[in-house]
Length: 390
Ligand SMILES: Cc1ncc(COP(=O)(O)O)c(C=O)c1O
Image 1: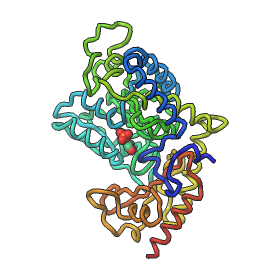
Image 2: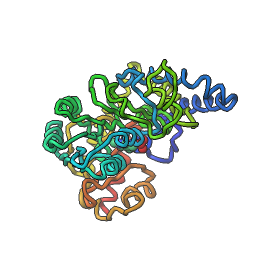
Image 3: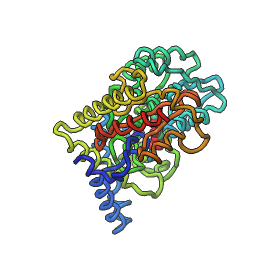
Image 4: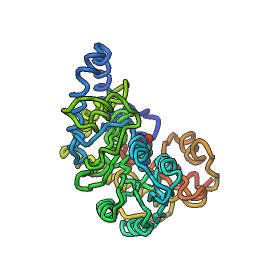
């Protein structure tokens, strides 16, 4: 069975790959072997072999996300990718950063931090009632002559919608506004073609939908922007006299001693996931998308709410607004939502509930990864029906 490749506790109905994706057991075995090899001869591994091994993985990742591998840097997570760009750039008091009200909270915080003297403008994107056109015009209507940069999710966190970046990125950049794409959720959920998209900056997670071990993500910086982007940690690369590699490469490839095995396993995870279906990734994404669409249908019926956006805006996640009979308990300042807690404790279901865009409006978001099955969403729908009756 497909779930056998994952070590997820069978007692839990795990529908939250979007928050923390589980890594398949064969990939964890590769990681274990790499760690043993590193610890057998640390100097040879880190000083002698690591650079070549990273090159090999970057080449595979470049093919997966449509990028020249020389423009890709490994970072531990997308939060670091967003920090790296926003804290490298200089913002003046008259500048604005454009975001949407669907940005991931941590990344929105980075924008607020980076522009302490400038302003962050959040475009409200309709949801329910989302459409690519509505999202596009909501974002473009907030552009002003002061907009310096746009930070846009490829797939949004609370609402799980694909933003229409294919049209937004060229439009914004033709107006002189660089785009930083927060693609935390995109690689492995939808085809990603960074070269075609042309954004100045793109960060994406490998430890979510590519199923790499935790601590694997990348930052792509377009070549004409690389001189201004420095890693958060300055190390040997800053004054290296090597001329065989770009300064970007030299700086990002070594940021101090750490465990490089999450990065090194990206190759194994891309190939393992592709091996699960006859047509590889195209099939995996299609299967998960269809399951997410079906899950949404099942849940919309149980919750008696309309589907909030077209299927074309979904990858492998789907969010639905909760009806008022399930949103009475206020969300706590710390910890998970009381409904999320009840689903976990009383029904063994792991699924996130978000307060969005305000504290008293709540969304439920399901994920569909290869180990998930239709019956799990029916189990969730039954639980929600029972909670609505109480
Ligand atoms: C849109 C978005 N950006 C960034 C992140 C942060 O990812 P990470 O914790 O891997 O940095 C998330 C996490 O779910 C996300 O949904």
